[in-house]
Length: 322
Ligand SMILES: NC(=O)c1ccc[n+]([C@@H]2O[C@H](COP(=O)([O-])OP(=O)(O)OC[C@H]3O[C@@H](n4cnc5c(N)ncnc54)[C@H](O)[C@@H]3O)[C@@H](O)[C@H]2O)c1
Image 1 (tube, rainbow, N blue to C red):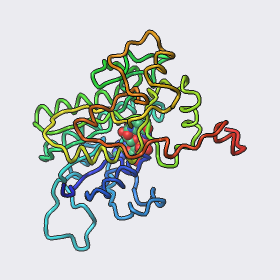
Image 2: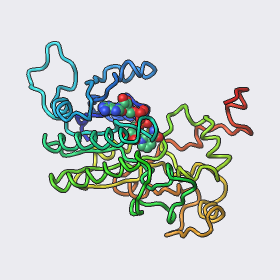
Image 3: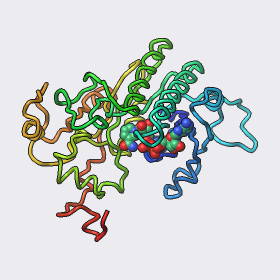
Image 4: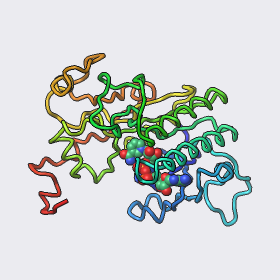
């Protein structure tokens, strides 16, 4: 497919930087809308130095409308062509977990930000919107105590009633997307993203815990999202049109530990939770079947390729106490 003009929100954050890098690799032009400049927050990623950031508070509708009608780069002079909306918007900006700011602010920033981006994009005639949702909408990750999934594998059909303000804001974002997609007849794909790992995070204490203490990591559904593979998912979403409103679990194919077969592993931990089908040997319990089937996602970055087995967690192996 020819490269698209893409407005990306939240590109200066942990995940966005990697996704933008992948989008550039696939030939797209990207402009970043964020409170923070991308180039200065990503000096370790020289590929991003030419991506322009418009500093824009997405909770302000006027700023969003203005910034989505834009040149892709600063020009001196600008080309003769006047500014115009991009071909697509990918919305990742916001608060990425509870307790970063107050609950009400988490809700306001995420829900108003998503509403403003989706409203402006639709009213400016943009036909393709991808938004970052989260597997936390399933309610387990930031639930009170040890909540459980209702069945395995966890699909996009599962009932969602999260009890924390972050996941609730993500669920509201999905409903905003559904409403606008129905009204404007556009494609809005919501990615329910799993815990994202940057390339240098596979040897963190958290991943060591995933592999060696899997019973303690039910909250992420024994599933993860590689930041680069998430970039591919966004590219695939740009490439596939006319699906209308869609929700996709956005995780990698493989379970985050390799202890036995997935079906047996889950039955040992949760004998009372039903299985709706037999899962593959190492299949992630949060199912990515839909994104593989409808968007042709093809995983490139399995965790096993990067993880180094150790007897103790990395901070202990390195003599650090954390
Ligand atoms: N990190 C994960 O593991 C994970 C998992 C699931 C979903 N997500 C979702 O992916 C997205 C990116 O997450 P992240 O971890 O990169 O978060 P992050 O906090 O690192 O980055 C978020 C970016 O959004 C920007 N931002 C915040 N409020 C804004 C506003 N009002 N206007 C403009 N920009 C604003 C920030 O400046 C920042 O650059 C979020 O929507 C998050 O909910 C992340």
